[in-house]
Image (cartoon, rainbow, N blue to C red; front, top):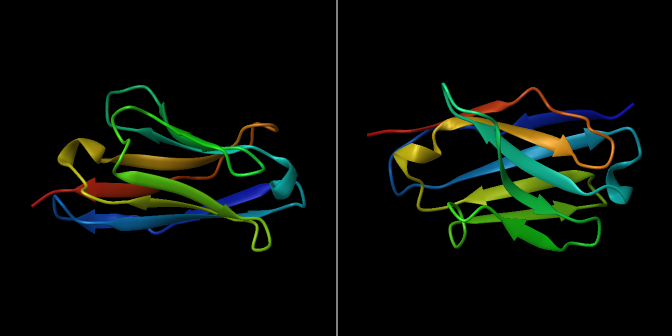
Length: 113
């Protein structure tokens, strides 16, 4: 069974940057497509970015040009570099294994002055 642990969330001012990490265990990371989702208060969980097992990426329109998803299969870790953050990016961010359906516990990102 895979285990996913997110880190790197926090409070940042508008225009600032954060880098989220998702550390995976269980041996299936390099065989899996992975994704970041987020859920804001009162809203449904939404896909932020996705990366295939060989590094192909796609993004939600709302984050294109600002966020970058990446992965290091040797470290079994996925990343989300978030730049030019906006208050509407405030949410709990979740790591997801797309092929096996595993989720992390989430990390809070708050963008506020």
